Image (cartoon, rainbow, N blue to C red; front, side, top):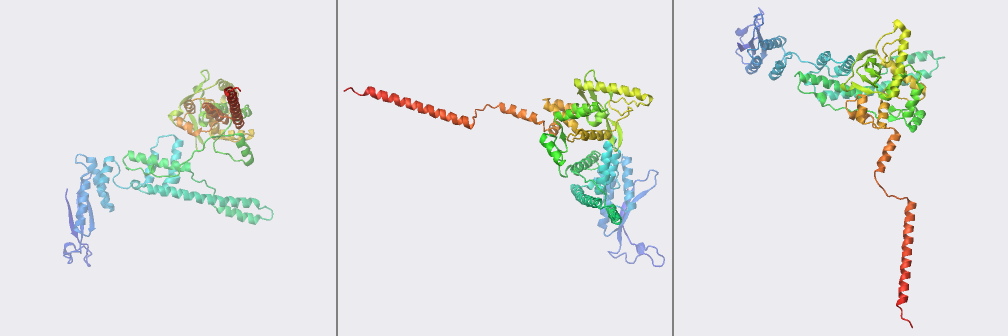
Length: 535
C-alpha cells in the first residue's frame, strides 16, 4: 500500500488566509517546515478509502521512523485474515483521528492473537467489573467479591492500567488501608468519649449544653469498622483470583497480587471452658479466645436447660454431630434416614445480606453422610412427631418445605435468627458464652476426646483435609490430655526412688558393709590364734 513522507509548510497568505505550501519563500530554509506522513490503509468493508496521516515531525528521520512503525503494525495481520486486517486498519484510523500514540508492535501482536481490544487501555476497575459480571457462583459469594471490589479495590487501584499494575501499587493500597484503620480507631474513640460525656450530663438545667454536645456528635464521623487482617487477606484473594482469570485470557502475563506481602491471619484456637477460665470470665466478663468450647458437663447442662425448646433436636444434632448452622437449617427429611441411622448433607440455607436462599454445600467435601447414634435418632423421631402435630394444627396455612427444622408454620428458618435465639438461650442458662458455631467445635472436640480417628472426625465435619481438623482443634478436654500424658509416661520404665527411699538404701548398704567388715575381722583374729605356737 502507498505511503510517504513529505515536507509541509503551514504559513498562510496574509491576504487570502490560504496556506502558501511550496510557494512559501522560507520553504528552502532547513528548519522552517515540518515533516508529515501518510499511509494508505486497507479500505473499509463498504470499499471506501481511509489512511493514516500525522504531521509535525521536526526531522525526516523521525517521520520515517513513525511511517515504518505504522507499516509494521499493518504487517501483523496475515493477508488471508480479513478480520485481523480490518481490526488493525480500524485501530490505526482511530489512532490517527484521535492523535493517540502509536501502540507497541509486540503488545498489539499479543492483543490481536488473544482476541482483545487493540485500542484503549483496560483499567483495573473495568476488568474487575467485567470479571464480576462473568462469575457463575452462588449469590453470597459474588456479593462478598463485589464488596471487596467496591469498597477497597476500585477506590485504590481502579484507575490504574491493568497491564501496568505492580506489586508496589498493591503495597501502597494495603498501607493506605492500615493508615485508614488508625484514623477510624481514633475517630471512634473520640465519638465514644463524646457520647459518654453526653450521657453523664443531666437533662435538668443543661438542655442548651446537651443540644450543643449532641450537634457536635452528629458532626463527627459515624462509628465504623476497621478492615481487619482476615478482610485484608480476602481482598488480596479476590484480586488474585481476578488477575489469574486475566492471565488465563492472555490480557496480562503477571499477577502482582500473588507476590504482595501483608500481615498473616492467625486463626484463633479452640479453648475449653475449664473451671479456671470460667472463674476468670465471671470476674472480668472476658473470653480467653474468640473460639470457646464447652466441657461435656457444660454441654449436657445446656441440652438439659433447652430440653423443652421447640428446636431442641437441632441443638442436639449440632452438639453431637457438628452440622453447620446453614446445613442444619436446610436439612430435608428426604435426606434423613432414621431407619439407617444416617443423614446426607446435600444443601444449606445461607444469608445474602439479610435475605435467605437455598444453596449447595460450598465444597465437594461438604456433601457427606453423617452417622447418627441411637439417642439422636430418638430425638429426631420425637421431633418429627411434633412437626406432624404442628402441620395438622396449622392445616392449610402450613408451608410445606420438607425440611427437618422449620418455623412454627413450616417455613424456612432464618439462620441469623437461629443464631440470635441460641445466644439468648446460652445467656439464660448461665453457662459461659460460646457461639453457635462453637457448638460444632464442641462436637469435634468430643469426637477426638472419645478416641475417634481424625479422618472420621474430618469427614463428619465436612472438612476437605484432616490438616484443617488438626489446626482448629489442637486443644482437647483437660482430662483427655492428662490421660494421654499418663499413658505416655508409662511407656518408659524408670527406677527412680524418693529421697527418703534413697537414704534408707544407702544406710542399709552401709550397715551391710560394716557387718561384712566385722565378720571379716573376726575371722582374721580366729585364724591368727590358730597360727600361734603353744608354750
